[in-house]
Length: 284
Image (cartoon, rainbow, N blue to C red):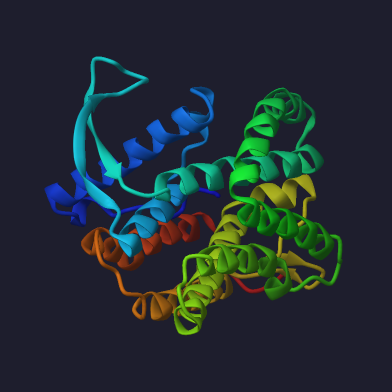
C-alpha cells in the first residue's frame, strides 16, 4: 500500500500515541521474524492500520512489553502482544502488496528505477512465496487486482471508477475475510471497497503532475483533459465519506480512539496535503 492511512498525532492522547507506536513496532518486529530484517523496510502506515483494525476486531492485543529497537539498539520502545495471527497477517499483506507493486514498477519506471527495482525484487519474490503459502486468499486477491489494473489502465477510455475498482475490490475482499456472518461481511466489504478506492485515487492525485510529465496513465488526466482540483477533491471526499459510513457500522472493540482519529482526522489530513499540491482550474 501507499502510506496515506496515518494518524493525526496532535489530536491523540499520549497513551493512545504510545499504543499506536507499540502496534507499529510490533508489526515491524513480526516482519523481521516472519521474513527477514530487510523486509522491515517495507513497513507502512497502511498495514499498521490494517493490523490495528484486525487486533481491535478480535480483541487479540493482550498488552505491551518493553524492548529495544532493532534499527537503534540504544532506543527503548514498546511492542504490542498479539494472541492471534493479526500481526502475521498484516506482515504478510505488506510483503505481498510490495511484491506486486515492484512488479508493476518494472513496467512503469524509468531506467535507473528499473535497475533498483530489479535488484530488490528477488528478495520480495522469496518472501512473497512464503507469505502466499500461508495466506493464499490474500495473495489471490492481490494477484487478481494487478491483472484487473493492467487491463483497466491499458484502456484509453478508462474512467476514474474503472481505474479505482481493482484496488477497491481487492481490499473489499481482504477485509471480508474477517467477517463471521453475511451482514458483517457486507459491512466489511463496503468499508474495504471505499478505503481501497480512496487509497488508489489519492495516490493518483499525488502522482498527477509526475505522471503527466512522464506520459504515464493517470485517471485524473484523460483524453478529455486534466481534472480540476475541485473535481478531484469532490471524488476523494465521496470515497472517504462512504468508507466512514461503513466504519461506523463496525463493532470496534479496542483502539477505538486511535482508529476514530485516523478515520476522522488522519486520512483527511493526508488528503489535504495531496490536494494542496494540485493546481486549480477547469479541465484543459
